[in-house]
Image (cartoon, rainbow, N blue to C red):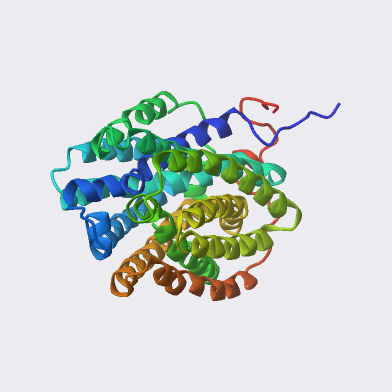
Length: 422
C-alpha cells in the first residue's frame, strides 16, 4: 500500500511560527514609523511632508535606509548556516534580533531609535532568509511551493499582527509599548528551538565541498548575479511602498483608525489569497511565470497605493499585499532550487545584500522625490516603474520546477516525525 504524504508536516509548521516571530520583530519600525516621527518630531498643520509627518521625508528615508543597510550583516550570519548548521543559527539569530527590538523601546531620540533597532536588523534578516532555506530543504519537490507559501504566510502574518497591534495601541500607547510586546514571540521561539530537525547533512557537506565563506562557486556566479538583480529591483519597489504606507495613511490622508484596522485585517485575507494563487501558478506554470506576474502586479499595486485619497490607499495596500503573497512561493522556490545545498544559505545571505541595496535606493529616492516634488504620487511613479525592465534577467534563468535538493531531509525517503495531514 502506498504511503500518503503531505506537503506540510510538523517541522514545517514550527519553522513557519519562527518566521512569524521574525516578521513581527522586523516590521516594528515600519508599523510604528508614524508614532516614532510624532514622538521625536513636531507635527503641525501644513502642506509639507515634514509638517504633516513630524519629520521630513528625507530624514525618515535616511533612517529607514540605515536600518536596511544594517541588514548587510545578515550575509555572514546566514552564510554561517552552511558550516554550523541551519537549526542552531536560525534560532540564535532570531532570539538576538527580537531581543534588540525590545531594547529599542528605550530609545531617547529618533537617531538612537535607528541605532538600537539597527543592531537587531541583521539577525532578523538572516533568520527570515534561513526560514525559507530550511523550509525548502525539509520539503520534497512536489510540496516545496506549498511549504514555502506557509512559511511566507507566517512571516507576513507576523508583520500583520505587529501592524494590527500598532493600530490597536495607536492613540493609547506610543511605539515603546509596541516594541515591548516583542517579548511574546521571543519566548515562543525559545520554546520551539528543538522542535524541528537539522535539514542538511552538514558534516558530509563540509568534508566533500568546504565552500569558501559566502562563496557560491565560479560556475554559479553568473546565475547568482541574475537572481540578485531581480531581488534588487523588486526591493526598490517593495521597500518604500511598504515602509511609508502607514505614515502616508495616518499623517497625510488621515485614514480613520477603524478603517486602518479593517484594512490590516483584510490584508490577511488578501495575503492568503495571493499565496494560494501564487503557489498554484508556481506549481502548474512554473517558477519563472509566477515571478514575472508577481513583479508586475506589485509595481502596479504600489502605484495605486500612492495615487492619492483614502480609497486608493486601501485598494493599493490590499493589492500590494496580495501581490507580495503571490510572488513569495515562486520567488523563494526559484532562489533555493537554482543552487547547490552546500551554498544555499550563502545564496540567501547574498539575497539579503541585494534586497538591502535595492531597498536603500528605493527609500532614499522615494523620500527625496516626495520632499522635492511635494508629492507622494510623483515619487511613486519615478521609483516604481523602473522595476519592469528587470524581468529581462528572469528570461536568462532556467526553469527549476521539479528539482530535488540533494543532501537534505526533503530528499530522503522518510519524512521527519511523520506526515501531518491537512
